[in-house]
Image (tube, helix red, strand yellow):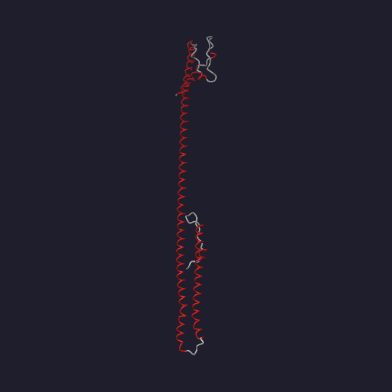
Length: 266
């Protein structure tokens, strides 16, 4: 079935999505070029056919007109001269046929050349379209690869930044933990020292109660240190006036506090 410009104009292609293909605008432009070229070739072929038909009709009329004019010669009595006139009529009828054959051969040659040129032009257009399509395909793949590479590089950079921030945060947490552990150990040491001094103070007070007097050598040692005195301070010792029963705590309460401190230290 021959291809016509109407076939090219009315041709429809299936539209695809999410798949590689040709640019629709470039395909439409190429089909427009093919349609115009086919229309031009068809017009040239029609003109050649019309010329060939006109030449063929003209040659037939000339061949048929010559025998009709032969009987109209006024030289009727000269019958013996009829063969020369008939012989002359034959070349007259043959010349238009030769011209028609030459025109037909020329038209056929021209048509063949036009067909060959049209095929060559169509092949050239197809090759150009294929080359452009391959170029677009390669450019698209190159752009896609570049975009993918850039995205991978950005992802790697983000991951490295996250790992760096993570290391910094965990390092700071470890430092804070070590500082807190040192502070806790300092507080525990202070607590042990405080309990030890408080216990010593209570034991001395208990011995004083048991002996019933105050040793003059202990007057400067019997006070609880500032760290052990708390907010209210240690109980004051009684002077030489002998008011130990009024100011000193009872022996049972001191023993209870001392045993409680021993239990907590254990």
